Length: 230
Image (cartoon, rainbow, N blue to C red; front, side, top):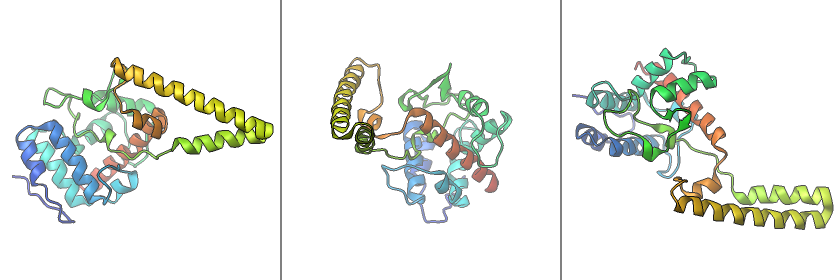
């Protein structure tokens, strides 16, 4: 029986119970909750590579051990690390080149035929590829970039290039393009083409940047897993 040790007094009973009952989606969400709590991050926040580097080994061993035990070795951070290393990844905490990163994501089933899966498209049962869970790609903190910041930069560019008239013109163009884009995203969501929340679309950096951030967090995680003897 896996011991539920924690360096910070975290209670892993619920995670153990969910995993023992094969409630994989709920267990994934509970894993997110406890890791954010251990890292002293808000529940609606996310993890950074610094959070991972400082994550207590006792807690990491408990979380990983529970996933490995109740999935019969199919899921867990140590399983993901093994896949990563076997596909050319280095355990140095640095994001690898795209070729290595994509190999991991495709082997774990997070990227299929060149397409990144949304969280709701993941497979929450043991028919999933080895290493599929837990999936921390949706837990990583994206740096917020409020639209107002881009608006200010846009207007300043107009002011510098064309004075007051240039600033007013670019401000109007900004407003029009965002209204059009907002209406377009609402329409695409209504017909089922877009499945991510509109709010996250407005407040986050481009997907490519987000993917690189996730890559860095995973690289840090695998380095930490190794340092903790897993």
